[in-house]
Amino acid sequence: MSLLIVGGTGTLGRQIVLQALTKGYQVRCLVRNLRKAAFLKEWGAELVYGDLTSPETIPPCLRGITAVVDASTSRPGDLSTIKQVDWDGKLALIEACQTANVQRFIFCSALNLEQFSNIPLMEMKQGIEIKLKESKIPYTIFRLSGFYQGLIEQYAIPILENLPIWITNENTSVSYMDTQDIAKFCLRSLQLPKTENKTFFLGGPKGWLSSEIIKLCEQLAGQSAQVKRIPISLLKLSSNFLGFFEWGQNISDRLAFVEILNVENNFSNSTFDLYKTFKIDPGDIMQLDDYFLEYFIRLLKRLRDINFEDVQKQKNLVI
Ligand SMILES: NC(=O)c1ccc[n+]([C@@H]2O[C@H](COP(=O)([O-])OP(=O)(O)OC[C@H]3O[C@@H](n4cnc5c(N)ncnc54)[C@H](OP(=O)(O)O)[C@@H]3O)[C@@H](O)[C@H]2O)c1
Image 1 (tube, protein in one colour):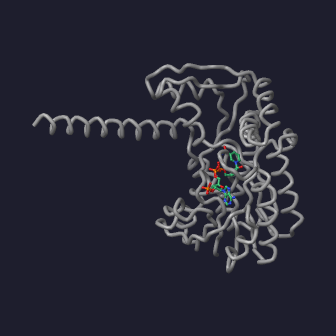
Image 2: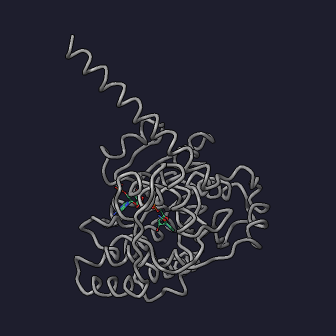
Image 3: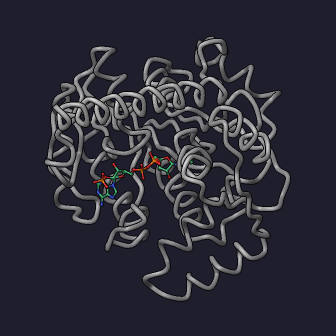
């Protein structure tokens, strides 16, 4: 099976590329910056230039492709708007897939879409889900929770750098998940016909409160966190305020995304069935505490290496 991965340079996309290559798939990546994506080529993927905001670049990327995994989304710092990528770009991608007779389309969506359809990105994701279903391309939609990877920037780094951690004052627990595990589900769905034309709500094995994540990071870092609470109403206000300005649209949507993922989801009943459907052993799923432990061990080793190199340099200077 030949795969086209859109968003292969992203946090989730790169894990999908890596695992697909390990599993022996022929992997092509639609990328808009060949230099930035060079690491994917080193891993063994074929790179093809494509940009979702330039629809004419999409069809050539689909030649000979059986299945498409779409893990792309607009980047916060980009000049292109969310609408150009997450709506117009995705419509063009679906249309091109239909013409190219693609046999499966995996779409990475987000949880809690219905509650937040007032937020443009969520409205677009919901709309794309509908268009995909109407397209008659066999699809699998994953509605995803927050990623462990995002928590490093949100919690671990501020603690290590003595910077404040901003959290909302709502006590909701979120079932974050490691992108390596999400990638497993995406790729497994390609081998399971019963996951065709279905939508799955994918969350991690345990719900985490912000306070629990902070405590975990404090223990691992051996440092206390400076916690600043921001009321969810203020977050809503700032996202509405920024949304008035074109330049603020991306920022406001990102802020809104934090809020969306902070809605409690109880996966406990459905998770077991999900793992059974995908034939994935729950014991193989990365737990958040193990993920953070690995991160801190790697980081502390790196810091020790840097210290060692500095001491060696000082010694050489003295000699
Ligand atoms: N992060 C989360 O916590 C979370 C939670 C729920 C759902 N999701 C969804 O999961 C998916 C993956 O998220 P992520 O955090 O891994 O995304 P990400 O790290 O922000 O990566 C976005 C990817 O999309 C690509 N892209 C952006 N604009 C493009 C364009 N015009 N043409 C082609 N490619 C373009 C980027 O390429 P460049 O490298 O060239 O910029 C990058 O590869 C997204 O659909 C996201 O909405 C994410």
